[in-house]
Image (cartoon, rainbow, N blue to C red; front, top):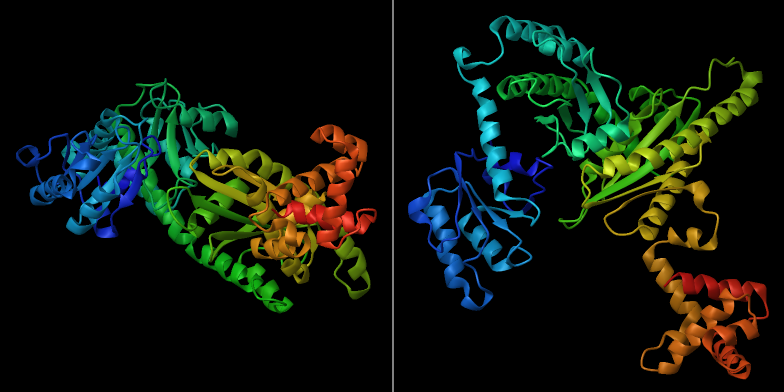
Length: 539
């Protein structure tokens, strides 16, 4: 087991504070928990060190921290896992010392026990016995041989799962993604709705049942999990060996799909080009396995981890692909874009059409009708599955914007613009670290429309329209802004504004006149009222 494997265990919820690829790839030889200032004599090379940081005090200066971290380096520790419960966070002084001495540093949240980490390490090491000589394998030799042959033949993951559990009497077992999507299930396993499956994975630790992550080159959004509702039906080593076989199948499957993913990247990059050549777009759609004609809907998504600066485009693509995979019968291509975005094009085959020239209008109309149906399906389905995908990494911010359906490749550029605008609106109106989906059709109010306007444009408009009312240092300006907001909210009713603000009507008249004088607007005119209302919404 390597250090970076700990970061992939959702149940531990660990956060990487510092560590490069070489450090995270170190093999874990054991676990030691200590709060001694100098733990040298208790450490063995390759161990990870768990510390609640009871020994650390911000008033002591850096000498104590330096002594502790240098002891880890001299002992050959693989990583330091620092608990956040004592001090509320990992001290920056400790992170800097670990960077100097090249010790990987992981933060352990207060809700994760050191015992859970220790058990995760030793359970994984127990399972890894399956990679040692054949006399230590838990799976019978004939079963292992059959699974190897099926891997070579490229059988489906469902067939492979059935063969792996057949010698155990085929207990009910599901192969699930973190969002609850069923990849495969044994013949005795009942169909499991995505929401219920997701809840089972979230509560599997410490509850009835067994869940094991299949190790592969994946993210929290598209990882595979073996889930057995009944605990103890399969010996742990056997389950780990089956998971290892499924992991090999997953890696082979991903390698075969690499060209498809590259085609999705190229399509997404092409749609970023203004007025891209329609023939080039149709060819890119074809390379992705999508029809070159028909109706399309575009979705743009972002996934930003709360613990990192910047955005994670690869995670956004994985999250979006996982969410769309919940939709049956939908063809789509996903590509990651710079700046933390992922872009998906969803195609809908409107049926068989006569493609002769005189039927072009009817064909486009039929395609548009089909696209509108798929657009509604995408919007509704994302509303249901987006929270399930977000639950795979609940500390992240996960947003998506959905375009209006368009007919033909020529309309995809405009659809991308719509989706990005809706994405900006979703990100602005949602609470931090949550999941939210917005569609172009949701822009039904002035507030929703303005939510997608870039921050710098909003700021210019606000300062231009409100002008002197925003100048700092004058308390009267805040009173004027408050009066303006209440006045507009009450449809410019003098009496209701006065009642709400507990003022005399004459005072309201005076303040409104001052607003008009300072802004150059006439609040008896509807267009000027809208100008001021929009400026207030841009705050």
